Length: 122
Image 1: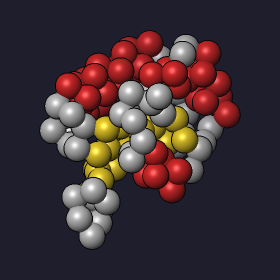
Image 2: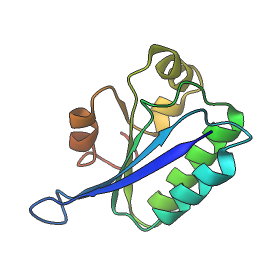
Image 3: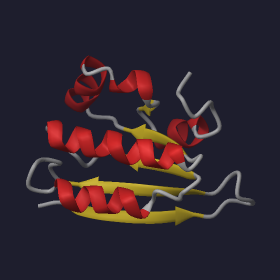
Image 4: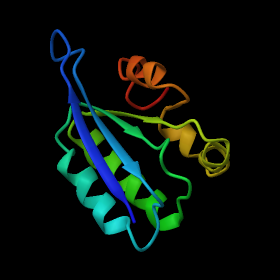
């Protein structure tokens, strides 16, 4: 089962405000549709942090949905950073090269700060 939490953090202006999408549970072929919908609802968000700390497992369907959602957000000039602190998931994101196309940060504070970096992760 996948639970999704979406929070809007208001900053002093639009440059410091951001949305946080926090899935909890496995991201796999059984839950990917729900996750894809949640990402699509954020496709117009100018600044999004996807918090994967509550995700113990992600399969290729979940990773594909994440990449597709990030692509749509970037097409709308949005910026996305992934927050992840689990060693297994961090290793997966590194091994697949995901962390070369999307910033992956181990703390929420670092993820929010990275929203101000180049959206391509360079």
